Image (cartoon, rainbow, N blue to C red; front, side, top):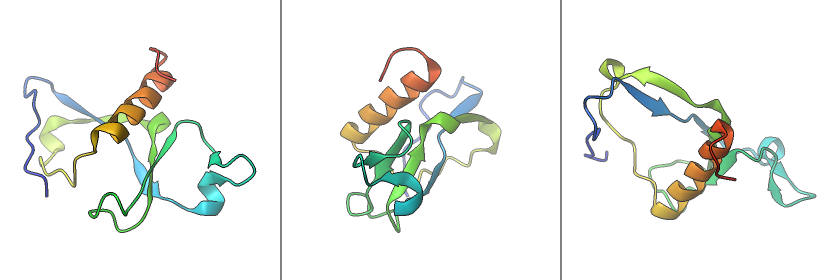
Length: 99
């Protein structure tokens, strides 16, 4: 577990981005060589040993949870390059720039 602490305790909610197992047939467009959904992002298990398998971040399905329901345990921290790409996709979903 990552010992990171939620950095802004005055905020009452935490933004969550769901993830799911990567399934080639469901998530990958073989003809175009890209993810089927533009707002999905692939995290590879070889890069993140905390993941059991390749995982898709579903940036278009963001939601918030109340801070009091969050136990503070992070599974892992994203590497900077992945975080930048996910933030771009989130910005696009929210209509504030990005991709």
